[in-house]
Length: 186
Image (cartoon, rainbow, N blue to C red; front, side, top):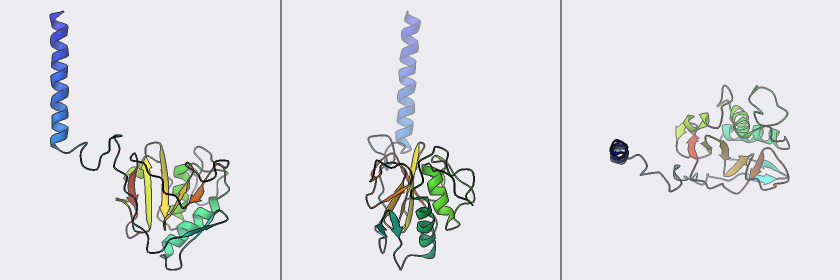
């Protein structure tokens, strides 16, 4: 019995030592939220916002060519149903349906920013850290979405919950669980 109590005490001491070490190097402090994820970093307002007309996005006239190509590619997916694993077979042709990361991969490929589709977890380390000026990917291990010229394309948290699949929205999705990433220069 004394041996069991001693083992429990040693485990508690070890756990406290590990916690103290993590706090000393800053893990779990700056940039973290009470939910355990990264603090939500909204993208800065783009120089000009895109518009949504009949479910499709219209890029601002002054947007960089890459932004216009991302929006054009994203528009091709509107009306496609949600399909887990959809969009991961090929970026060069349309699939029957799209999941969250397949949607982002296809849209970014429209601007030649992707060579192959990524999973939502893989987008957590894609590109550069933080929100971009025109384009931001928000990702965690189970979901990802894209903000382009102030519009969000997402397969979840949709404006029209009766439809599945990719949709454009003017509403940002605030969540502390997502990592913000962006392509260089955008």
